[in-house]
Length: 287
Ligand code: 13P
Image 1 (cartoon, protein in one colour):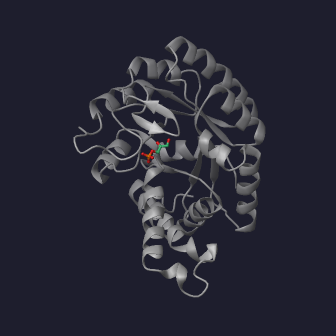
Image 2 (image 1 turned 180 degrees about the vertical axis):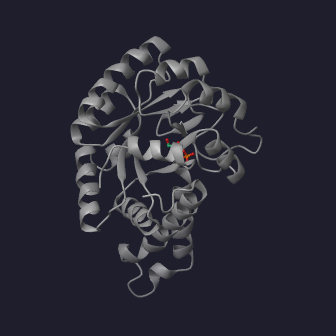
């Protein structure tokens, strides 16, 4: 079922677990994530960056693919189709195309402008029953051309944005997209704790889920994180499994060049990664 992420994240916050957002890139990615969620009876959020949106031939193509798969694969767990790090225009385009959730990343605007634009989009999403994520304090690293310096969010600004009625709030706490450098000092739990106190029941979102040690993930969930985004880790797993297949010469054996065979180890690797994350986040059996 394609649903807003609001209810699944409120349940996660109350139940002290987190729902994974896994970014999709193509049909194989989407199928692997949906099948794993169904097998594990876990709610799931499919993330689409604007770059991935273009790559997959636009938002309406993606809505068609995801709705078709939910139907044809018999997916019964709650699935949210969510725009990741959306611009103001991107969020509007996804709403029009039939996404069930959008992120408006106004973290690079001055706080007043972030508030004004978030407020307008909140009203639209409320009318349509969609969920909306906002961001305060940009996430470090680079994702699809969106570059952030890894600042820590100001807890008072978090409260201001949370009060606008967003469904979930991403707050920078030293997290970074992509691989973490060896000298990464770790998540700022002091900042997370302060934000949590200010925003109360609002589900918090942790971006940059790739490579955060398990104990830090668990501590973040205990302090109010209810949605964790994972992208790079699935990409790395897919690439490594595909590389192994080719390096072992399997594409040269029989019909090993058939894309359905060539891509199968990568798909299995995505499934294994998603399973591992769902188990770590505690969302298994919560659908
Ligand atoms: P990673 O690529 O570091 O897992 O981050 C994903 C993310 O935060 C998507 O918004």
